[in-house]
Length: 278
View (tube, one colour):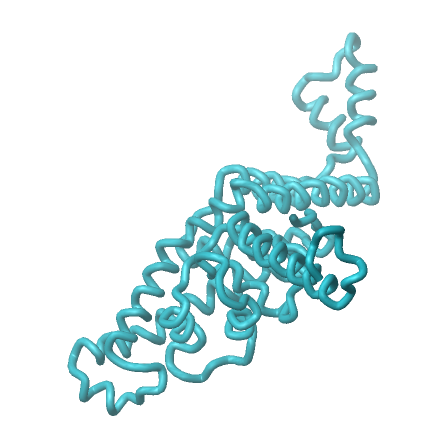
């Protein structure tokens, strides 16, 4: 389970995430779009001074003997100092950015990431197609000898890699980063925290998660197609939603807890429950 945290999130972080999603071909859910539109309106808001309010009332003929007191009271209530306006704006934007993060932990967040699935799948398909013709270490000269289909796949491979790198660096990692949205939580059981992003690409919890994490979060693989060529051809690639990524890590975390308990009981047989073999 993850705990919602928006400590390190500001308006710019929220805007950057959604702009990157739309730039890559995804869409922003209505709930999140409404939050962003409200934030934009708040940032544009400038409180009117008492003079502006009274001048407007006089020009529009709204100030009469019968309502003069009401108009003056309204002007007093609506006007405010720059400091008060800044404080109110900060309070409102703080609440809204937290609401933005809370939405990421729910269906709207899953919809946001899910909107990138077609783009992601197309890039992965292109890499898998390329792997049918050549390996990650095949050079251009040898690819030309393999025919037109191989050459075409080779030319597109860089584009597919760029798309997947873009999704990882500008959407998935900011979501996972503990100094960002931190949607997967701390997950202290992981030995390789930097590769926690791998939970977004695992179809099912199997094999060693740390091994996969080292490929996703490790040093850049210089071969054409990069880490994505390795992952697409060896483990397969899928784009999980935020909730699915958390489910994947929950399974690994539960297995780690059970293994830790077994190891402890094996090394401390005197603590084993009655009837249980050491």
